[in-house]
Length: 271
Length: 162
View 1 (cartoon, rainbow over the protein chains, first blue to last red):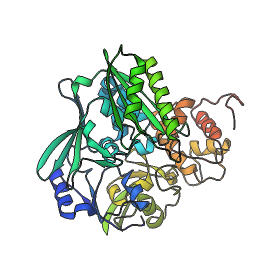
View 2 (view 1 turned 90 degrees about the vertical axis):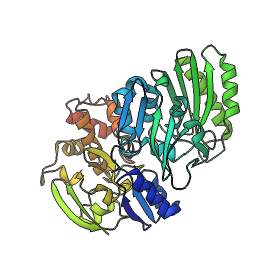
View 3 (view 1 turned 45 degrees about the horizontal axis):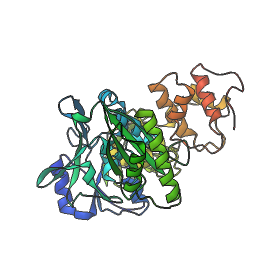
């Protein structure tokens, strides 16, 4: 690395948040490292300390019960999520979206929580967690609090996390288990790439939810619709909810157009 | 500085390292194991792929101190002296390597793939190497080498070369 920092291995969440309280903005939490180490190398972040949370007992635990739903610990990798039998059986949309996230090697390190905390507009796991109404469990020196995934993202790469806080788990409720859906993501190449625009659609019985990546400063939850709602009104809600930009990968107009195309195709396939 | 101990291709190493050094640089600079290459250093190209505690990872995205206590397999572990592994020999037969820079990463990704899936289909091979960029071969020779080493070699010309 071209930037000098110190490494701490936290033994518990208390230990990690104590480190954050002591070091303030100079410290960064290290889990998978697939965003953090790239950002440090690129000079976008310059922490004096990284606090590795992977040794916190139970942090890589992924559990599902029909009563409580899914609990995803902060060190659960994207591959561990995809390979989990309960996730495949009860939350297939999470697996479909995870398939679109980077490459096999990266998914072996990258964590589900990290994908959310990094708060990239193109986070592939944000649309399914928005549809599934996940809750984000946050730890600080004052204890734990929970925030809805739909209130977690504030702006591009910004979340409601306050100084001294870290995310310990993502909780997916039992009541959104056993839905079905799909995720369509426009990329420059067929292989792994950042999304140009992505649309996730989830259906459970007669209700349908839609969320979008790479089409606004944050991932966007469009809303819930009845399965017999006319597609045109869902299309209208989608267009009103997103606000894409022109950039090096694509124009705003094309993103708006393709979001509509993907919504139509998903509607035809799933609804 | 921190003390780390790790096992690479069956050999135990104990060294002091700076805390901000990647596992990739540690292997190359401190242990002299230069088979693992640095391409993009951002987890895109897969040239630094190795197997860490049984999982294929990008060594550029792991700190050496994070690998303390780990068991690591690198491309140096594939050949036995001057005798190539079956996979390496298949690469040679099928011209699956040209400039050779991506080859160690591809070999490690495929070693990991074949452990998970001993007889992968063409699509499964493509998914298995999606994290490895090769700018020379167009991948088809790589896929043919994997089909060959898994006893599924297609008729000549069955796969379209680019």
